[in-house]
Length: 245
Image (cartoon, rainbow, N blue to C red):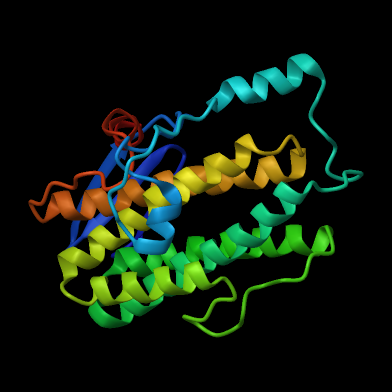
């Protein structure tokens, strides 16, 4: 096993920090994603962490998949015409995955923390998966080739704010990583709930599991440093389910 590497393999989470190896066995599962009652998603995108009055966001999790099977309602992606909501979701998620990658690139350059480098590699795969969906459905790619630039103005503001926050300290950079993965998990679950297209669902489920894995990685690094990570957006119970998996 290579040093300074964080990865999943056969349900084993391998972490090497400062030469110390930690191996945790985790059962991969699908959990409902819930947002804290005092957080509104749109305000988070626009204001980054503004606390407003909102309602809890709960996914239907695996029940949605079972319902599609029972109803025979899942659409074959090879023949589907996308809904407006599906098109909007693909375009948004393409740039949101790029945002995660871009922030982590900047923070890795700033601090040289291996966790950022490792997750960048995963985010590259997520970006490619979203690009493949855009190509398949003949959607114009909104993502630019330049790090830190976005077509979506809300994501541009979010990127600028998170990079500025992450540059305050290493610990704050790790918290920024956790924040990004919490938001990604919520947004991905929301997009899963908005589609019955098999192609799109398949990619989104993979992205969701990636975000959960990344969140656990940031929590583990902070824990190794003696710092307890508190969820910034997710409902406490949902957060505990994810990190315990």
